[in-house]
Image (cartoon, rainbow, N blue to C red; front, side, top):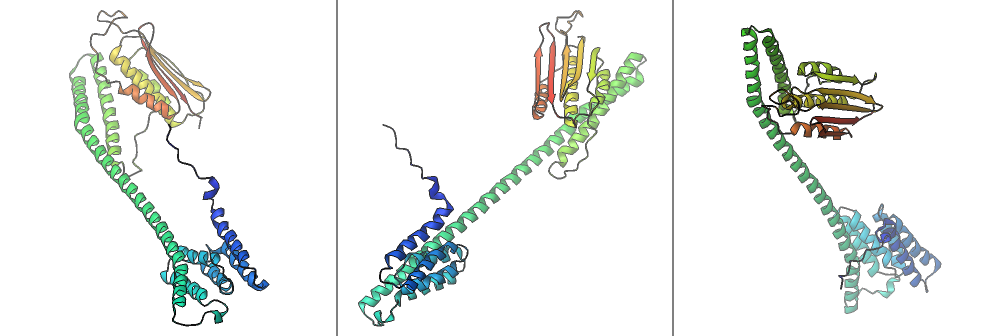
Length: 385
């Protein structure tokens, strides 16, 4: 046996037009049922009371006043009861609801003709007075309950938004704290180590008599100084994040800087760069530059003596970046071996490049080649500026 599934209510039951028109329809039926012994003008007042309910949400007090004559002359209930409910549900002042319910109770008690209700302190009048009070107080209480529920829902929604705002502010505060801690660690550790590299390279440049060593030391020092500048910019951005939005950044690398990057890498690379005449978006140029930079860094670490091919080619609205290297050279200098010593790496660079490409809607593939080398292929689709 399967459990009974909850039945879904028809969509029309939740329509605001249904809630607006149903009381009008019921009031017309109520007026028709009591119209047998009434004159045409009395029936007209009953119909007016029913039709006036169409305006009960905008003008509830006026609608109540329009329903009272029909209730006074005929025994119609649905229209004035609905009007009292509307006053209680749509008017925030309690005294307005009290006056409306009292007026309806008095009109219902002192019904036309007045001679049928003598003012006598007897059991029948007491029961009829209780009936009139309940007839007016019931819809008033339901209207007040509906308005209170609506106000509580609004307050709950405001409270929920306030809690979400506080949670967001707390998360931003924690993020700012973590960024500050990361900035301190980067400054204290990385900056210190790079500064030592720069100092040692400067000392080697001054003391060495070998021109090749002097040139290498100069290159190391320039790269160290440039790394320190970028690192300080990054630390400044991390510290200012969440406080200022106009933090100036260092000039970002572009496609025009690729030749200098390849030259400074010291790798014998076969290069082909054809990016077209029109400029590419800055994010695409930066992603292409970082792709070539990371690939050259990995080649320098793992296969410094391998042949390198670099191609950056425009393909319509796509930019294709290809970096390949042959198999690494072994200790004897022959290709196909394993280098004697490699620098440590965690693979985070390729992960970051793949994320850059995905953010631009492109792809990045890094894989070994059949001859034992490695290739990095990036496809960056982007419309030209």
